[in-house]
Amino acid sequence: MNHFEYRGGAFCCEDVKLADIADAVGTPAYVYSTATLERHYKVFKEAFAPRDVLVAFAVKANANVAVLATLARQGAGADTVSQGEIERALRAGVPAERIIFSGVGKTEAELAFAVRTGVHQINVESTAELDMLADVAKQLGATANVAIRVNPDVGAGGHDKISTGKSDAKFGVSPDMAIQLYKRAAADAHLAPRGLAVHIGSQIKDLAPLEAAFRVLRGLVERLRRDGLTVERLDLGGGLGVPYFNEPDPPAPAEYAAMVNRVLEGLDISIACEPGRMIAGNAGVLLSRVIRIQERAARPIIVLDAGMNDLIRPAIYDAYHGIKPLVERKGPGVDYDVVGPICETGDTFARKRSLPPLEAGDLVAFMTAGAYGAVMASTYNARDLVPEVLVAGDKFQIVRRRWTLEEQLALESLPDWLR
Ligand SMILES: *Cc1c(COP(=O)(O)O)cnc(C)c1O
Image (tube, rainbow, N blue to C red; front, top):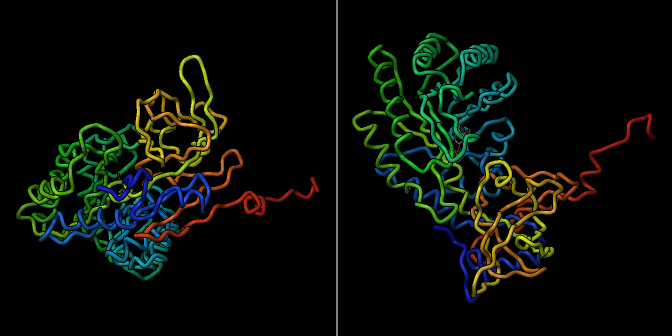
């Protein structure tokens, strides 16, 4: 469920007409709904009750500090994959003890930062990383909270580029290796192994692969405990899909939580989850204006002022985003190709999409753009970095202003020999 709907023919976010935001802020612009973010967090968290789960929002899905602060106020933690994301989470008010540090490429400096910050846990992805972390913690005279990321050899996810759980993916270690690393960590005075982690992919629409992965984790916990080791926590990762179009809905949080509770029944252990898309996807739209309609033999092309630099998912994942006119239109649809202004054929949002007849100057919203949208935006083609707006009830405010060409140019300079 989200808080974007037509009211009296005007497409609204909560109690604000999106056209008013487009007029005030210009287009393209991302708009997020506070009520939707809060609702998704609560629904996810409460689905596990009475079990208490650390819901660590995956910052890489939407790193805007205002979005993170909205979730932090609700009690959310943060799953992070760089020092920058840890700093964003801290700045947004997420306490260090609710921050998880994941990722295959953590540098020595980043590990040191995370240990000094005292994060909830560092999810270690390889033997080499465990050794580096042990050194770092020793130098700091500290003890690092560690979870071992297991690669359960289960494939899942909406696209090859977002599947992470097969054994040939770059993420995590095999179950047997996880046991070895856990024991190695337990024997190190500067490492405190707390548990195991998995994350098998994104935009997952079927519970079976997740269940298979969690069963692997359960088996490993039981093995480690039989060997006399303490295992306090499991980190189940993220990955739950969201509906992008008219296909069967992905599993609801309640079904997901029921499956988790079933798989882990009788196992005394605390749980963290790292949803990103599920929390933020439906909480955001990208507003854009039609520059012109280009007539063509095959079918007309809608040229928008948003491009792949603003929303890259269709270009790199063949992703589908619903497109809604901000003024409700009735009547038979027209098949359009919908493109942006960037000089790349990949800058195509949709082919042969049936939409109400549109004209130059009309405003549209790309739906389900709150996750992996603004975070992947760039200034390609010397365009302004897209702004972000947060709505709460009848209020809205810019939470990342447009980054103008002047500001981009201020970072650049001519070398001596060209002056
Ligand atoms: C990307 C990622 C997530 C979030 O995935 P979603 O599909 O957005 O829920 C969680 N954990 C890790 C380790 C990730 O890399």
